[in-house]
Length: 117
Image (cartoon, rainbow, N blue to C red):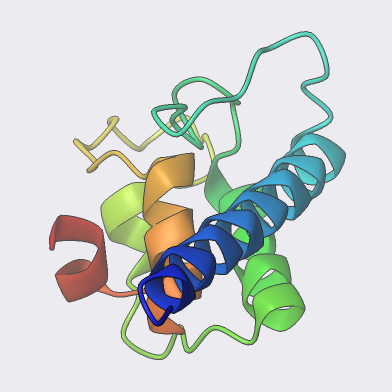
């Protein structure tokens, strides 16, 4: 029966995706040290986890290294506030979520097209 093969392939795909998500959760918890916050696909990296400025850049670089993600077209200043200073006014940033990081793992790149697609 060839009908079972596609179902089996879908099952393997879901299991692999679940394993990647569990690994991503462990990575996010370790990098953010936000162990008291439940992390979901909708969790915001900066807003919910408080990762901002240079820490945001470090987070994305570590993410890129861990999952072999091309970040050459990712603009940190669009998604992370700059380091606090007396003279700078807060700028508006776009939200980056754990779910968007999952999309980046699937696409092997993190850029506006992956994030917004």
